[in-house]
Amino acid sequence: LAYYLSPPSTITDILADPFHREVYVAFVLTACALFSRAWIEVSGNSVRDVAKQLDDQKMLRAGFRPDSTRKQLKKNIPIADSFGGMCIGALTIMADFLGAIGSGTGILLAVTIIYQYYEALEKEQEKIIG
Image 1 (cartoon, rainbow, N blue to C red):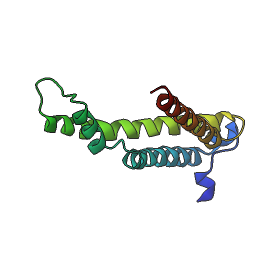
Image 2 (image 1 turned 90 degrees about the horizontal axis):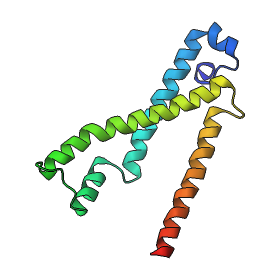
Image 3 (image 1 turned 180 degrees about the horizontal axis):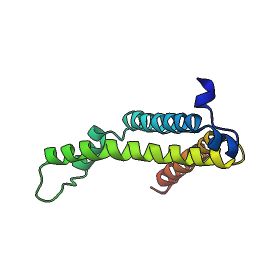
């Protein structure tokens, strides 16, 4: 099982063992999509949270009730977050297959951590500026 869930090591392995490649791709894309959906719920960007933010800001779609906005968000947010997770998974797979320095997962973690520091720095600057 661990063999199939780890990335193929060379281009010849990718071509020689298509089952390994397909299982690895399916696993990474599925895992990234599921983690993305879980992260949306935990991070305060769920449908309920976004609908509340829009209501608090008095942002309504013209000609629609707040309930219909919530229904539309229920359709769009899960698809968007799953697709975003799958795109990140695809970047990880590409990095693994192309033999980037380190692993695709390592690069993904590094970029994510750097971006979180960047967001934290922006929030601190907003607090200082006012």
